[in-house]
Length: 438
Figure (tube, helix red, strand yellow):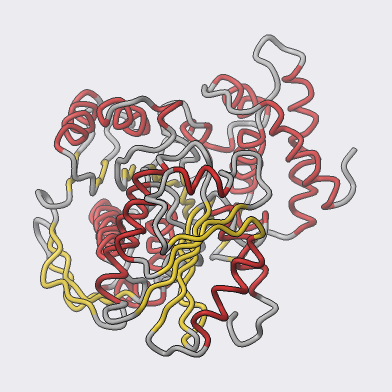
């Protein structure tokens, strides 16, 4: 029996040995034994290559502003494991983690003895989340972020009020497929019969896949740029814009999170809230919507953790994320000398990511960190142009210290630390010792 929080985390992480086992059979088995808590929640399901966490955060803040209590299931975590299961942005307690695992662990051990095999780490955590949300009658709505793909992701046992597909890009191709169409097919797997689906996907071939799935499921389909629009977008300290739907225009919207990609994410949130309002599921005033957007922050996403020196953390962990990062640098860091520290997982498209960073960096430092799939500095360097602007530092703490020294006395310089979210999590924790930064 699990008695302490540390024991709980050790057991949960031990499930990593099972790797990834796509499929819903184990989740359905556990849901059956738990009394189908998934049927007790009012959910919004969010899939996509990038932008899931930000979109969830925008919707959460809007609904909270209107007085609703919102559960969220997100991954990976940045500061604490518990934040994966949160209520109104507050991670559940250590005692609640222990209590949940005491309920789920016996089921996992029983399941392991069947032909289905034991549940993975992510399946265990998903089951914990659904059980927690299903049994908590104070929670009005639950925002569920897909872990990987969609069709065979463990979160796909839910039947949501709205489905959202944020974007499609080349990531996790060893599991999701080699083409945009294949990846889009996996993401579109979250579309349920008669449940509206909203997307900001840009590629025509992906849109066709999603649209066809929506038609097949008789699901109303709303696409950014065709069924709702971003108007009058301009940047200041954040972003200012309007969102126009078929029957309403939301004026004077502002977000503090920077980048055109964040405007797209925010527009998805606005459209989702608009549909829920029209269906009678919620009541949200225009001022509450605007306030919720403006209050939204999402750590590790172009997060300015210090103004002097200027230090930014951004979990751009795939080519699409790096593209958004470099665009945002071009808009919001004009005239700055950009110094970048980068670490990534070895199964990413490293050459494309590094090539984009080289275009904006005055200096580019490769480093690595303790994680099973972390790329070595040698791997990163091999995918670069090997120019004089590039350096390698195996110890990431030393790389960060060096970067801080490089920009500390130059008001025209900025340090951007980017790459894997697992790396950003470690860096952010490390930088907490600098009281003036975090």
